[in-house]
Amino acid sequence: MEQIEPNHDGGANFEARTVKDIIEPAESIFNKASVKTALDEMQARATDSSSVIDQRGELLGTVSKNKMNREVGGFGHDPKTEPVEAHIEKNNPYCFDDQTVAEAEQMMLNAQVGEVFVVTREKLLVGTINIEAIAQENRRRNAWKPLKSRAWERHNRVFDTGYSTPSNQRIPQKLNDAVAEGLTCTAMGQIHRILRRFF
Image 1 (cartoon, rainbow, N blue to C red):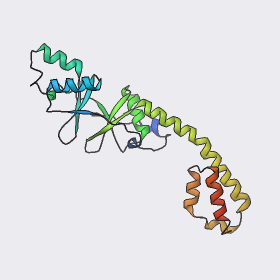
Image 2 (image 1 turned 90 degrees about the vertical axis):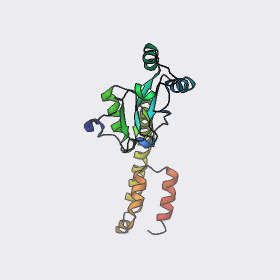
Image 3 (image 1 turned 30 degrees about the vertical axis):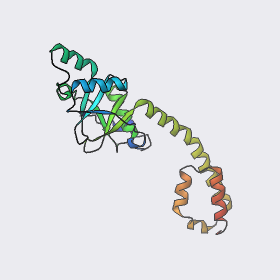
Image 4 (image 1 turned 180 degrees about the vertical axis):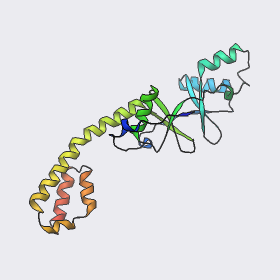
């Protein structure tokens, strides 16, 4: 398996949401399964390839339907007894579940793939992440930015006009942090009503 190093310059401008926030489940085949079992499982899932894990869940690689059919049938091996382990492709890109979405995106761009496996730092398979899920995440983030900006502007305007006394230094930092995250107008109104009790 290959862990592709991210291009940090390319991802530096993205927000630091982690891969585990948008991970998708991945179905796997155990490495001790027979080729026939693996082929039957892939047929049932309507897929041409599958990840392969060991008994503890560590990602070992992938197997493909075409490769197993070609090799097992070509060499006259019995698919009922031939182990999947002998046909694992091990050079698959992956990322860690605690890396940022931006890093995963850069990995896929560098490797020119649309999907990578996601593993823990112990190499246990936890799912996959694909370029479409990242694109959706980016669209959601970009759609949220105008709301966040408007809430912050409203926050500044109200505090500049209504709470301009030195006592506004007592406003908890958590309030400012919350507003910075993009509060709705309703939430802003509730906060202002609470603040009027103290100023």
